[in-house]
Every structure is written in C-alpha cells, then in structure tokens.
Length: 164
Image (cartoon, rainbow, N blue to C red; front, top):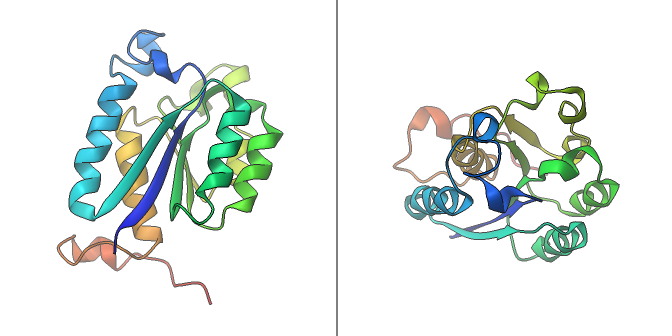
C-alpha cells in the first residue's frame, strides 16, 4: 500500500538558499524536494510537494488533502504566526499533520517564536534545518503504522496504537 503525503510550504520558502542563509541555510526548496523524494521511495510513499505565497491556496490544498492524502507535512512559514484560516483547515484533516520549521523558532525573535498553527498539528519539528522534512516523513509514516518490514524494528515498535 502506498502512503500518500502532501508536503506544503508557505510564503517565501521559494527563496530558500537565498533568503537569510544565516537563518535558513543554503539548501533550496528544490533540493529539499529531491531529498524528500529519495527518502520516500523506499518507504513506499508518494509525495505531492507544493509551495504558495497565498494563504487561500494553502487552505485549498489542505482541504483537497482530505481523501487524497494520508498525512500532511507543512512548513507554514510566516503563516505559522498569523493564520486562523490554516488552523481551521488543518482541523478538517483527520490524518497526521506534521509542522516543520527549518530554524528553531523558539530561539528566534519575539515575532517568530510562537506558532499558532501548531495547535492544529499532530507534531512539530523545528531547528533541524532541511533534515526536519526527512524526520517529518518518517514520523508521518510511523504514525500511520506503515513502516516497511525492512525498517529498523525498534522504530516500527514505537507506532502509536491504531484509532478505534
């Protein structure tokens, strides 16, 4: 069974590698997508990867994930700190919702310290740089109980109990 994960990226992430490399590093969003695809393949994960600077487009993508994705990985970027619309859309989706931040938002300035969208997320990964996306893929597959038999048994055993 193929696991379907929608990866969403918010505003300005199309400028990763250029924008504030001292905060976000030099890896581009395209390079992150390539790395995610490489990790997803042996896990039998199909990724749909999106970026938008428009809040309404991200809301529409989250809504479209219902019935078309098993999990959502989302870096809401600046919308993390402002978007009630994203929170409401995320609440509609029943599968795992993993929020990713490249930087450690808790060590940032006051404007970038508190993500309101995390209130509608299953888990939050921050401060791991682009590797956070890889961890999010593994976490989503693990939460869904779909780690392949070839994956380390210690991690397969950490899966949460299935919902009744």
